[in-house]
Image (cartoon, rainbow, N blue to C red; front, side, top):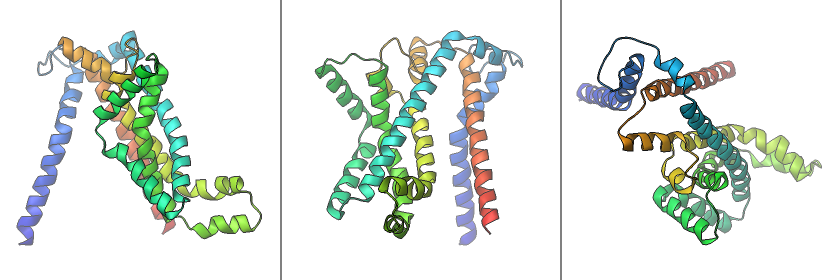
Length: 263
């Protein structure tokens, strides 16, 4: 019985991998041809990559996207770290209530959050600009930072922090020297998760941005609605995928080396 089960498991895993990566591979393959339509091969060419970096509109969109992602991730990481530490050191009943409240945005539909923010801004007469967009992305990513840091706080030995206070350290000093170093992996993972969520978000962005400010998601949606996706987007997709793959490989290699050094 083990062999059929093992074969089924392998087939299932490979089927999932094909479903996830086949569309990306198709875009990568057709990024090496200048045909306007995906599926039409007009000869091997790498001209789309120089054209990508010469396209001022697309480069502006990419810079806008990165700016929003990094800014919102930085704000979310700072607020999320403070919130996670505050929740962790709250009293039992308050801690349970705060943990439940902090998880509601994760389960809530994104369209509900987007509409709520839009109504809120309109009610108070706030014009849509970069700040409203930033607030929307912070609302989206903040709960995920808290969720990333909570496990590290639970794994932390509370006696070390209390011992530092008993030895005369100020709470702020103990926070910087004792707590933050121990939860730094959770902070870093929360920051990366925030960047990832912000980069490809469309709903929050579409409802909270100024119409003159475009990110990659709104740009692609607008081009799709017009029925004319620029061929350079295929090259951009490939660059983003390769960049993400390099980061993933570097992180995994560093993690593997740390485990080997610890043995």
